Image 1 (cartoon, helix red, strand yellow):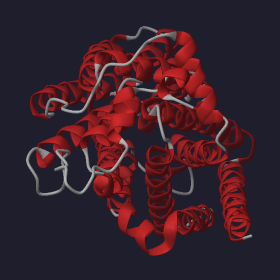
Image 2: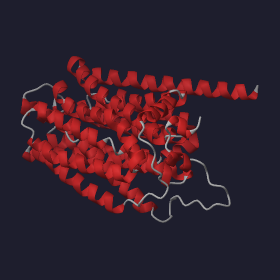
Image 3: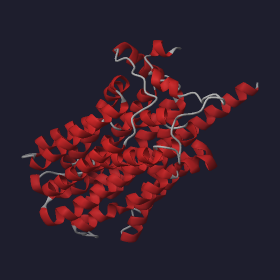
Image 4: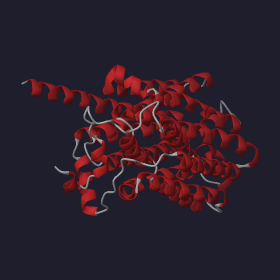
Length: 425
């Protein structure tokens, strides 16, 4: 099926083939011109995105106290942001096909940081949830556009590593946002804490726009809804892409649930930790930075499915360890959960970019949509499970999600073997 009939971006199609041996490849590669600037710019965009997106997560106990609401009610400040992102990521990806990746990413960050500066002044939980939903919708322009930019501007052999660095920026943003808010909130309250994150994000947004190289391989596509829907249908008809979307959602269900609820667990008996220390627990995100940035080597050694098995198994082991009433074991469990999640996410998201033969922006957008639906589901269901059955309930939700990851990966292994046998026959 031709790109015209599917609504695929001609830019993405043009970027997909490996150039002929007699044609120099002008795309960026490690050590080449612009690669470091590009990597750092997208790293900063990832920092800003995750710092803003999850700015209230470590503060949920304080928000609960401030507004006099339950954990499940306060969790909507996280679920609304991730839900807004999930709903708007596909429309934003379409805008990036028409107006350019860098333009959409810049506009998205500008709106998100502006809303971030308004969040501290929310007079009620309802207003706070609405502002967070708007902020999440604005941030939707970042993830899919960034992956499409990388697929167009970076050589294929460097793509997994480049996406891994972007995901690493996500982990640093998530970590720094939670650590900063934890300590600031302990002294001055949650409103000042989210205001500080807004100012940090402003700095990241400005640096991103100044550093990101202008795209050289982008060609504007069409915004025609019928063509866009045709591209989306094509991607959803691909069994491998469907599995990858579901795997991303399930991994994020675990992660969203664990990190939404962990603050409540650690501030309660038997730990009774102060808010600053609870915020510092998120330093464990540094493990995710390492595991995401090394995903390319992991796939090279184990293959994509082997890497997903390892990521799922590591996450499950961490969930089980976290059941202990020993702080060192809980921390070790969080380390394993974080390492497994970020490795699995980097592997699955890069596989989407490689699998999609056309319309990579839409393929990435569908992955991001599923991923953040998983985050919203994990935040909400994890909090409800915690309210009903304590930490064991949240762990149970996570283990069911990892079981789904393993089952989908097994289906992929079986499908690959059948395909090999069919070709051999």
